[in-house]
Every structure is written in C-alpha cells, then in structure tokens.
Image (cartoon, rainbow, N blue to C red; front, side):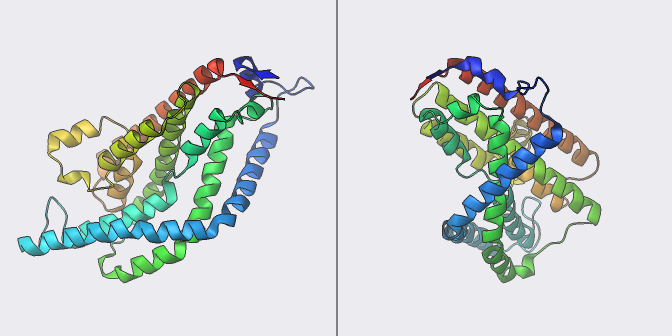
Length: 294
C-alpha cells in the first residue's frame, strides 16, 4: 500500500453515510485520546518524578546566583525592578509554569511518527493528527502535574518566605487564561518544527536551536526586565516572551492596565499565527509524504 498526500482530505472528509461527524462525537473522540494518553503516561510515574527532581538542580543554581548578586552588591532594594524576594519568586514561578505548559517530548514523538511511517494510519482515518497530538500533549501535562505536584509543593514550601500572592483575584484569573495560551503557543510552535521531519531525516539540531532561543528569549534564564529597553522591545516582537515571561509578569503585577490587555491580545494573535503555520506545515508535508507498507 502506498499512502500519499491525497489521503489528507480524510481529516476533514464526511463519514461514510455522507454526513459530517457531529461535534459531540469529535469531542468525545479526543477526550478518549486524552484518557488513554493519561493512562499511558501514568505508567511512567518514576520517570516523571525523576525528571522533576533533577529539574530543581539548575533552579537551585539560579537562586543561589541571584542571592549572591544581591548580597555582594549590598542591595536591599530593587535591582532591575526586582527585589531579592521578587527575583527568587520569579524563578519559583518559572518552575510552576514549566510544569504546566512545557513541551517535553511531543516534537520528538511527532518527528518519529513521520520518520517511521506511523503517520499513515492518521491519513486513512477521520482523525485530525494535530488535535490528536494536542490531546496527547494535554494528557501528558496532566500526568506530569500529578507526579510533580508533591515535590514542587515541598520545594515551594522551603522557599515560602519568598512567596508573593497575586495582586487580586482578577489578575490571578487573567494569569490562568494566559497560562492556557502559553501552553497552546508552545505546542503549536513545536508541532510546526516537528513537521520538518517530512523533508529532513534528522531534525535534532533544529529542535535544539529552537530550544536555545526559547530558553533565552522566553525568560527562563532571567526575567526580560534585566535586558536593555531596546532589546526587550525587539524580543516582544517575537512569540518567545509569550511562552513564559508574559504569564509570570501578569501574576507578579509587572504587567497591568492597558499593557496587560495589549499583551493578552498579542499572545492570542501569536497562538493563532502558530496554529495557522502548524496547519500549513502539515498540509505541505503531507503532500510530500509517501510511505510503503504491507
């Protein structure tokens, strides 16, 4: 059997009876994928726990670095707009947001599906591969959160003196909304990057390059407020700050008023652009794709 791009229409094609699949049936189908994905992910509880514990090592290093900077400079006030407590809490928030939104191995798995020909089954069934992978992404996040909750809570408890509550309930609600868009933006960008596997046998280098840009420009390594104003403005013309920093800045009250609403609209627009780009890469890739099997 030879599967080519002509089967991609099956993702949106009517059912055999000539009627389109009901929305409830589609939703039930992907909820089932989330349920199965959650069960599969929970089989690797020890791996998730180990990954969480080891992720605290670089976090401890960054906290120690900034505490040393504040102590050596003899500063009790703000440094680049952050007090010592705010800076330490920023990195605690980085850990929390990462647990909830980070894409871990989804791009590798997508690339493997394409490279090994597993993608063919999705071209022959009324299953949208992007929504299928998005369902697995959310199931992976749920499993990871369930495993990381206890060690993360212990870690936060150890630094509880630095905990900063959100300014108000409304701000916290906007933060949660932004968190959802953060997760979607990270996933769609990773999905689009994984689509390079349609053209390239190995995309590891490109994934690492993207990760390096995200790590620096999204605020993982340091809050973007420490950068010169011009460089910060340039970065905010890219989607990277909206993959982490923006959500944290909302929670901490660094972004408020008109800037908050402008930033939220911009984040939503980047999610839409990333989604459209992911769809474009998928359609172009499927046209090029061919697989052989018995």
